[in-house]
Length: 231
Ligand code: DC
Image (cartoon, rainbow, N blue to C red; front, top):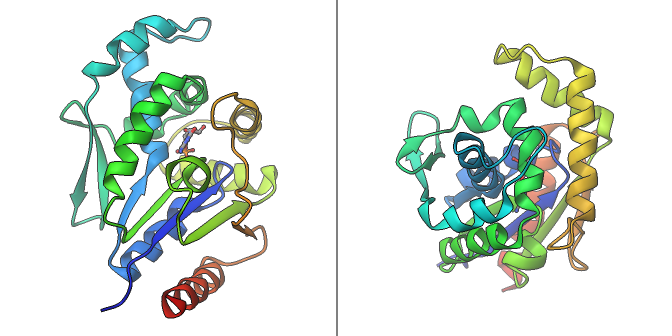
């Protein structure tokens, strides 16, 4: 039987982590987990319950309510991936808005939020055969992952990709707003005290500014195959 491994994909926002992770999971028959969706769902919960607004964050209120947050992924066979559910509601669309993107880094800075989500992520990966993407997967969630990928691309390239995606969805946002959001999230993600975004020492860095999806996928698949063969 082929050895099952854990694949950790980390990197800056909008570097195409989830595209690569989904391609790999589908090809290998592995589970795919988008941990950003979990942080986004907690941010949505905080917005819905008035724990967060443009000028304020009720950190204690949110921490005390964490026990009321149930996060689940349910596989949608039409889409070919699992969608995020918050307390029984499908929130896949709501969590991708620019409003949630604006608040999520603040929520992801809170240690109590991180430890709740990390515990759930480790549980999901206990049988391996998983591709998980996020910011701290190779450093905190699965420090022993057999393959760690760290993805980068310039802020301008990433903002353009995100802008195109949001426009396709009919979101009336400007490129400048998206670029500002990307840069702000980069700053908060790399400067927070708990689990900042850093490349694990044993990660393979991929700058995909000039790579097609297919080239990137083939390169990573070669790495997977080499690891599986060696074990
Ligand atoms: O990957 P994304 O853009 O959907 O992630 C949303 C936010 O969640 C991002 O600003 C950083 C945070 N995040 C995190 O802190 N740790 C993770 N493992 C995943 C996401």
